[in-house]
Image (cartoon, rainbow, N blue to C red):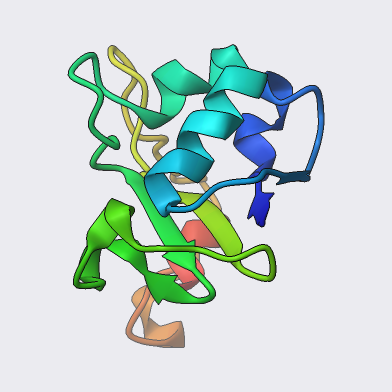
Length: 124
């Protein structure tokens, strides 16, 4: 089967975007993947060996979490497994949001309901 590696994890799979493994189940495919590329293990699994909550697995476009057998679902050589990490926004600790400086030439509110201070964010 083919396992598709997302861009953020390719550094841990020698740059590969897809890896072929021989496995009978989703769990066995992930095991084969992490045996071949051990640095991926900590990004995919918790210390207890469970798939991390922010890692989404799709077997042929079906979310593995909702399959009856979950990771024990049988696979064939023609199947594909996509690893999709959840991406969260936010700021690093200690950082504050950027503020748009109010310029001395700010246009009056009469131009419309939103005042434009010269900052791209004020136009949304």
